[in-house]
Amino acid sequence: MNGDFKKVTVAVYQGIGSEGSTPLGGLRYKTGASLALELGYPRAMLDKIPARALEGFVGADCLASTALEIADNGRIPEGFIVDCGCGAGVDSLWLAEAGRSVISIDPSDAMIGRLTDSAIEMGVSGKILPLLAAMPHLPLGPDTTSCVTMNGAANLVEDKRELAGELFRILKSGGVFLAADITSLEPLDETVRNDAYAWAYCIAGALSPDEWSSILAGAGFTGIEVRVTETFLPLGRIAIRAVKP
Image (cartoon, rainbow, N blue to C red):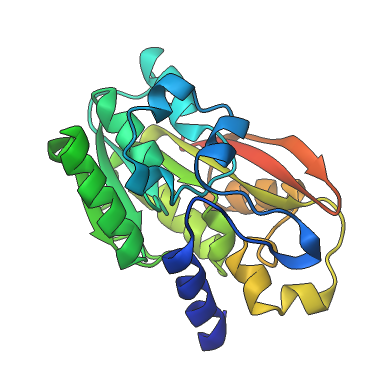
């Protein structure tokens, strides 16, 4: 991703609020509470999230719920869950409210600010460690966590092979990687691939399900599941689960 793409991406995520925006092709790019409800976030949980965080929500699935289900089944022991590309922090706040400790990583200081303020307001700041950092590099040691979530952020990373390697490195043996994002179900035109706003809206960086499976397998992951959860050709949404053996 060139410098212009990075500038546009930062500007988009600094400015996203509850009313959303309109990306290429006239597709409605929902954000905030309307998107969270559409993705299955329970209203009772959203009512606990401060408006400052909820207005900045961007995601592709209800990942916090999936992480907590795995945790309740004993697959995620006590310890940090890493929320990569946490944005305004809705997932991080939900996990913290449920008693989990979270390392929340995002490259936008505006989003980290929303999360920090909201964590204080909810009384869960002691459960959340916000880190300002740009992926694919993750400022964590090897074997740090048993779970990494990445909700609508992977497509903002140009080198996904390096990202997969970093995710594998920080996960403990048996650890789970959970992600959700836009996927390309049909080939995308090169004009889209080379458009800065298409990158910012997670379209230009979209991979096919098979490409994701190949990259994760190449990094060493097993038990790889890449499931299409919604189709709006040429794109769709996917949910990803992979395990570090």
